[in-house]
Length: 261
Image (cartoon, rainbow, N blue to C red; front, side, top):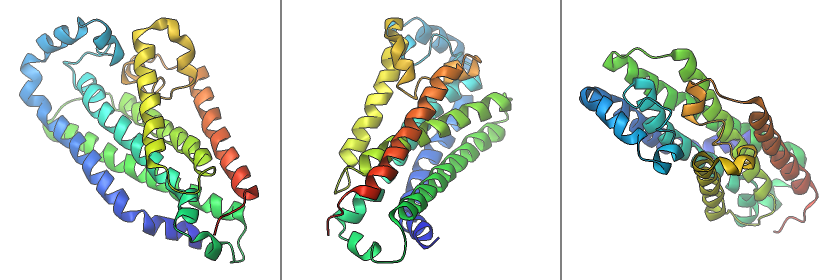
């Protein structure tokens, strides 16, 4: 477990920064809800009538004037993007960073297989992403309790579970891409995440792009669908399959590629 512990130590500062920023923003957003609650009804009606813009962000389905609707719109976008960027950036540097930092030749001279090396890195990634989501859930849920609002805690847990699964899927895809690189690819990580995010927005605006729900995890992690109980099994299974395929490809390719010194 030496590599696993080393990855956790290496990612500790980044984890603390991302957790503080994303969790802090979520707590601030929830804390702002009471000051807007009196006029939320008018705002909700306004947002619901903005055509494609409303459809893209689920504002035509979410009740923005309720704590869950406000949480899904504001906090959901913060964690949905922030958590996904964190997972993508962290994963993208895990395998490629060994070659880019010229530490691969040192690591691979030790009595540890490439599969074990990659496996322990993946385990560290899962712990870091899970930790980020636990901190953010504590900030969001704690904020709701502090302001004294009633919430559907089952729906909230379901939503956070969907966000966690989405981030792990993106991490799996980036893990596969990372195995192809010889240096870290932060631009590629952020570009892939942004592409998947905008694919989710496009699906919401145009139902003719139905096939996108099988490609973007932002479909099944959409607050409007989760809170309405409209989550479908097929897109979730497709997303899990893509994440597993990306991870499996990364393990296979890393095991056979020529490692640059």
